[in-house]
Length: 73
Image 1 (tube, helix red, strand yellow):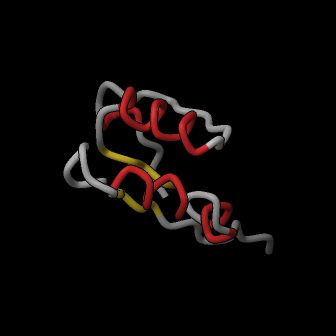
Image 2 (tube, rainbow, N blue to C red; image 1 turned 60 degrees about the vertical axis):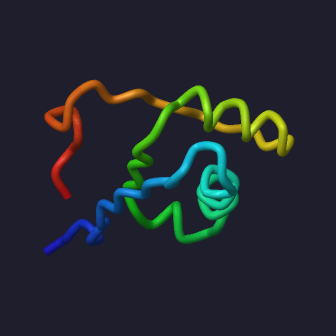
């Protein structure tokens, strides 16, 4: 029997947009754990794009408009 590996869903918030939170979230998403989980970042996508660019980090952002768009795990 072939079972799919468990893949948890994790929601991350960055806190205050003017603080260091967005930088920490962007940096954390570069870690190897991100390949083993479905990650959802809650916040202003423009803030994350701006901070990623300032940090020189390439990123992909998919904007969800509803929690119904999340896939069950």
